[in-house]
Length: 124
Image 1 (cartoon, rainbow, N blue to C red):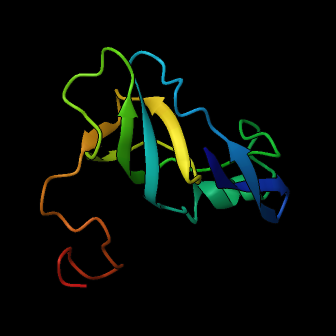
Image 2: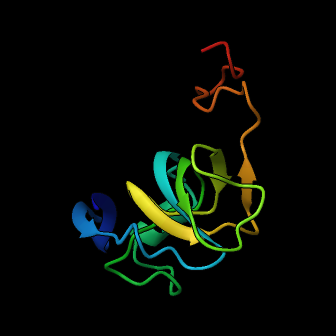
Image 3: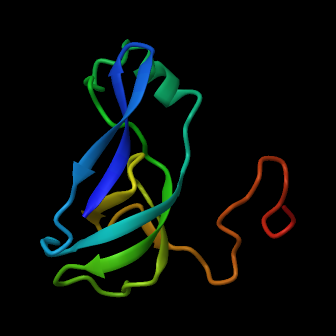
């Protein structure tokens, strides 16, 4: 499966990069996610983009706050299945394979996942 991701290539330089992901090779405890939304932080990610965050290596794909749809799960994943919409810790990419644990929660049914700043969910 082909996708695109955001890449910080060098300080103050941002681009996109094509990549391939093997959607048939989901590890035990993992899930393949199709990203719907990801949050770009003006704090952490701007600090990374500046090149002054030692833990963030360039070129690199930033991100940590995402909402997406599970496309497939690996063995041992309980309480999640294809079609579930989840909030999780992920990067700015179209598709991602990640652990279905930790910060990995189902979005409550009926909740508007696309809230606009300053407007409550469902009132956009």
